[in-house]
Length: 431
Image (cartoon, rainbow, N blue to C red; front, side, top):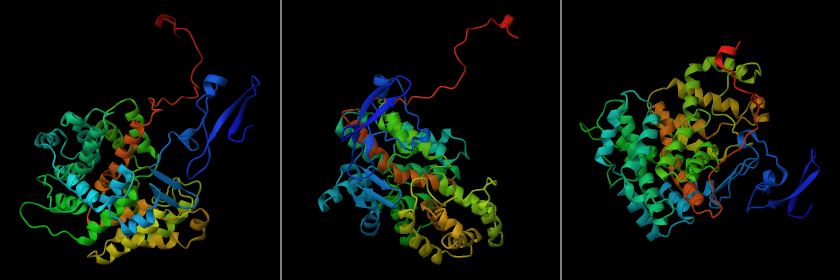
């Protein structure tokens, strides 16, 4: 075996094959198995892609064992403390932090792309009045390609950039409109004088009949959550965007596919599932019973918002957002029993030996769920806010894939376990 290769042996035939061993800037070495089928006639099997690198990427790096998250090499802790979402969007898409001039130009561009075509607003009336906002998001974002034909040349860098600007800018408008439509209120236009997150809050909560005052703490919390959710390597929705885009689908269609993947409760819907769990518990006095159920291997009940598939230590995003969650809860008027339950669960999880031993720490979904609820965001909008934040990650990953010289259409293989070959039997002869 060579220094930078791994030897694979097919015991059934005795054939050997040396495969290249690739190394990146960070993370484990990766075996290039591209020639495995053509040379040895075998596939690999990796259910859930737990050990498979589907692409090369220079955008985001995660070390789950150490609890590390980097955007373009910058630790998430530094970006959360010193940056803002618009700056992070520029960093992810263009690869570098912007200069003052670049930041001003980028922010100006995003702000002035925030309106949507009036005909697209009419499109909302085709949905049922109580449709889930995520179902509206899938349809409306997918329909953008029917309105913006001037940015659909997928291999044209300028068209890629225009589509990216439009998606980042219009997603809060589309999201807020989906909420307004679901509750029968008039859609609110964006205002260029407001910041990205302030604009979203006023489109969500303002009404024509009265003035709306934006809470700066809420806007700041949203900006922080958007930074933390901006990208997360090759997760289910990002992989979906790349897979859809690999066929040559336009960026609006690819991002719409990503939204559909994000909707699942095991992915973007996890923070919504946290609130559903708190509603099931109902009272602080019932917590010990549910803790016992969570520890029981024979009970299907799971504590949502604890632990993470990737992070085997504390989720670094949860560590960052925890203080913000507590700050917002201190200012929330009235006593919300669900938030009281959440804080008690957090206290137990950080001290209980079972949770510590199994590394079931509160994750970012736990804290984002209680922050959204404290701000007044409806539960069915939680994943929609995730969509707004992750749009920059999706479009950046799509652009990176489009510029990859080795780009091919994604085509996973399978281990077939169905019926063996058999001949057709006419219906009159079947028993």
